[in-house]
Image (cartoon, rainbow, N blue to C red; front, top):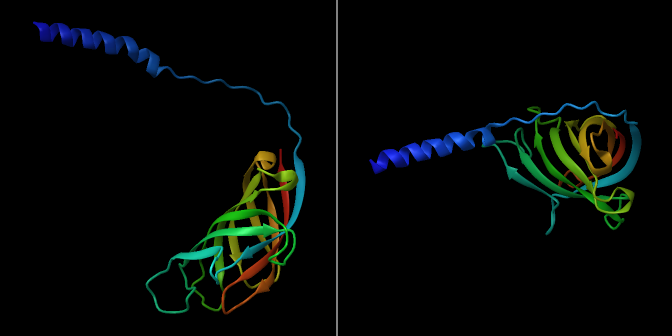
Length: 185
């Protein structure tokens, strides 16, 4: 008898609180018109694979013979962004993410790159934009897609025109010049 009363009490309690957790809330609003802004940025990315403190490290490599950076090799990056090409230039942020070697042709290095470019000083301190694009090595100037942003670059789209400022084929160290055009709100 006590079991039945306990069971009935538990069922009444559960039925009483169910509507509280099952409510759905939705509100549709018409957004106010926003003015799109355009920002142009120029900086250098230092992708350093060598030395005691590399900014890029190989985190996975396929089990195939060939060069050290073969098809399917995955790198994690935390590359400094500077105002000039020299490693001693003022650091304005860092790019964190990864890239994977995506070309089966060993003569043509191509990577698919995802990185978040965060600024840690200046006018855009605390803001970042995200890049997700294919990056072939052969043309001297390449175009990569900007797919998002936060802070002052909220809802960013755009493109980055990049070119190698320095490349060491032995170590893989690269300094890349970025000219970025962002459209954001």
